[in-house]
Image 1 (cartoon, one colour):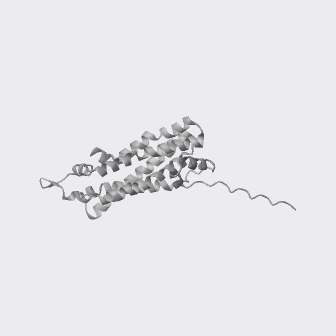
Image 2 (cartoon, helix red, strand yellow):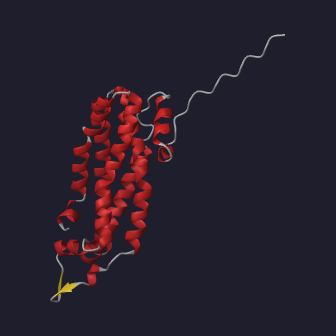
Image 3 (cartoon, rainbow, N blue to C red):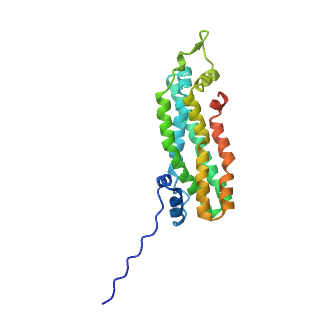
Length: 221
């Protein structure tokens, strides 16, 4: 009697982006075993960009409330959200493009950096709640009976400890992504030089784009 053929092992599956939070080494090892797919982790950057825009708009909410009303206020909120969203997407594109140049095809930079954006939504959601609960009505602040200028309103916002911490976290959060990306490139390429290049090439451009988005608040520090 013929023996039954053994059931073939199922093909490896790509890990979910959220699994990066529980173990980067295991995540990138599993990713190494599946075929490349550049858009595999496209959702985390989009979600992080949207939430970054919400955080930025909430930081500027007192300024908008003191300088605009009705449709003008809504337009200001929309511009703040979309502007930060756009710059965050640009930063993600720089990570993917320059990371690919540095780490090469085997580094799979779009997937590596796309997955690292999973770090940001929990942080941005927490900051959004804290900033929303601690909002200040700057429209009531006056100097010698005159309304504050926009510059003075921004400076008033940045006097708060929470606002300063939030701006610092928004500015420096990409550094955690780069640390994880280096681990990913090293696992995927096995080459320390390419892992460093994939990490360092986009570092300064991304930090510059992030600082550009926060420039009004940084200038008012």
